[in-house]
Amino acid sequence: MGTNIRVIVVDDSALVRSLLAEIINRQRDMECIGTANDPLIAREMIRELNPDVITLDVEMPRMDGIDFLGRLMRLRPMPVVMISTLTERGAEVTMKALELGAVDFVAKPRVGLANGLNELASQIVDKIRVAAVAQVRRMPCASALAGAERAAAAPPSGLLGRLSTEKLVCIGASTGGTEAIKEILVHMPADAPAIVITQHMPPGFTTSFAARLNGLCQITVKEAVHGERILPGHAYIAPGGRQFYLQRSGANYVAVVDDGPPVNRHKPSVEVLFKSAAAVVGRNAFGIMLTGMGNDGAAAMREMKDAGSYNYVQDEASCIVFGMPREAIAHGAADEVLALTQIAPALVARLRGASDRVHHRI
Image 1: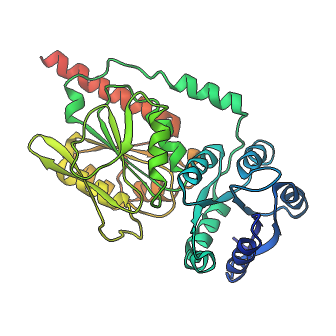
Image 2: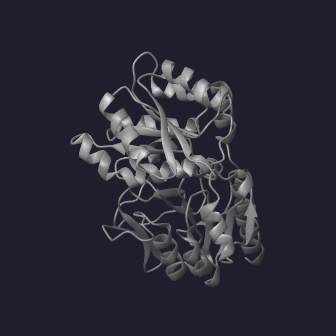
Image 3: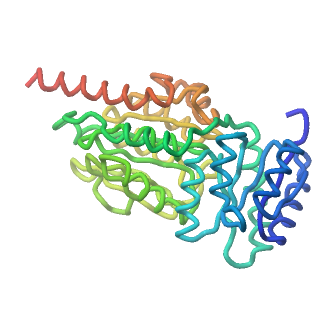
C-alpha cells in the first residue's frame, strides 16, 4: 500500500486503547488515527475519518461490539479485527463476530494486560495488515442469514455406502476460514467420508467453533482427540495450539494431536495435516484449500496430489484473503479452482460418481 494503514481503536478500556494505539503507532506502515470508548462515538469517528481498519472490543457500554459489528457490516462494510477475551463466553461471541464479517480476532490476556498485549504486538499488527487488504463484503440482514442456514441444512443424502469408509477429505484454512469451512460442512450429507480440518486458531476457541458447526451440520463436528479413530460422517478440527495429523492403524485412520513445534509459524499447521494425508491416505484423499494469508500447506498439498489425491482450491473472487489458495495453485497442487459455493457440490458429485462406479462393478 502506498500510504499508511489508518486504524481506529474501539475499546471501553482506557488502558487497552492506549496500548493498542502505541503498538500501532510504532509501525512504519500504520497509524492510529483515533480511539473511541464506545460504538456510538466510534460511529461518528468512522464517518469523519474513514479508516482502513478498526479494532473492536466485544463487550462495551451502550451498544455491545456484536450489535455494532452487525450494523456496520450491513450499512458500511469495512475490515474489522475483534479484540476478544479468552473465556468460553468470549470464544462464542468471537465466532459470532466472524460470522458477521469480522476479518480476524486477537485474544487479549486475562491477566497481565499491558505485558500480554505487548507480547501479542506482532500478531496484532500482522492481523491489521491482513485486514487492510482483505475482501470485505456487505452482510445480509439477520433474517436472510437465518434463511440461508436453513436452506443449507438439508444436503443430499444416500451418498456413498462402503466408499465413505475409504475416502478422506482434508481441509486447510486461515483468515476468513471459519465461515468458508461452515459453507463446506453444511452441504455434506450425513454419510460423507471423514473430514479432517486445520484452521489457524489459538487455544481456547476451537471448542466453540466445533460446537457451533456441530449444531448446523448433518455430520458430527468435534475437536480432534489424540488417539481416536477417524470415522465417516464426522469432521475433526485441529485443537488450537496443537498439531494435528493422521496415522494409520491397520485399516483405520487415527488422529494424532501433540504439542509439536510450529510449522510455517503455525500451530496447528495445514502443512502438518496435509503431509500426513499424502503419506497415509494417498489416492483416497481429497484436499481442499480455503481462504487464508501465507503459504501454509501449499507444498504439502502438492505432495498430496503427487500421491494421488484430488484437490480443490478456492478461487480469488470468493476468498477473504487469497494467499494460501494462490500458493497452492502456484505449487501445481490444484485439480480444480472453484468459487467457495461450488466446492462442496463438486466434491459430493465426484464422490457420488465414484460410488456409482463401485456399485456398477459389484
